[in-house]
Length: 179
Ligand code: HEM
Ligand code: HEM
Image (cartoon, rainbow, N blue to C red; front, side, top):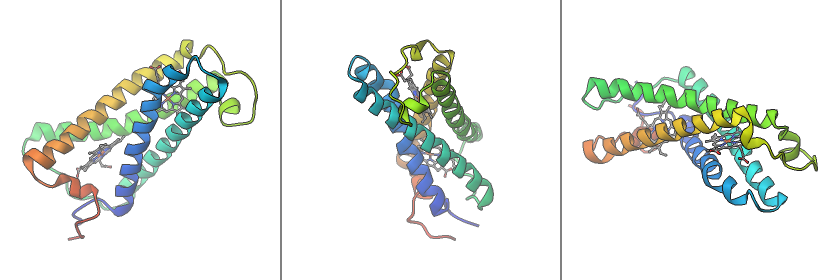
């Protein structure tokens, strides 16, 4: 029986946390700010956002594979069966929303012809209709769901760590040995 997540899962968990916060910050705050500025600034924001978003999806897919391939620690408990069930639902929803985020982002980029401009060498102007694309509405809505799930998940982790004082964060870190 293992006491905590495998080191590879720990590394990927925290990389995915950094990537999602980075991509979301650009999506929620930076795009608006660079909208009126030059092509280079807009391209930089799009490039950073799309690269981080795609890397995030790759890391999440790896995490899902490892979840099935490696032995998992016993389920953590909060002492309340309903909260424990909610935690399982939130974990599943985090994976689903993460993949839906990447899929809708990719659909948005493809439907507006962005990949050759942002990730390739095309010198074409940045399309003006990105905000009107149907995939934009879907991508923005999933973004709200994903970041809300991340917020609930983070608050739950802090509740465990500092109010229940059950050292839950240690299961997603390197300190404890295998039992
Ligand atoms: C940034 C703040 C975050 C904190 C403090 C945090 C903390 C934790 C902790 C302590 C665990 C272990 C729970 C357990 O032992 O049962 C965990 C698991 C998990 N975390 Fe996070 N996390 C954060 C961000 C994220 C993000 C951004 C995602 C995904 C988008 C995520 C997805 C998950 C999932 C799915 C699990 C369950 C592990 C699994 O079954 O694969 N976390 N997190
Ligand atoms: C971690 C995953 C991702 C997150 C959290 C995220 C989040 C966001 C957010 C919050 C917005 C702004 C929506 C609004 O206007 O309200 C946005 C816009 C956008 N995202 Fe993502 N996204 C992710 C992945 C991706 C991926 C993988 C792609 C493409 C490969 C992508 C392409 C775009 C594009 C083209 C826009 C519109 C840019 C603009 O308004 O100029 N996103 N994203």
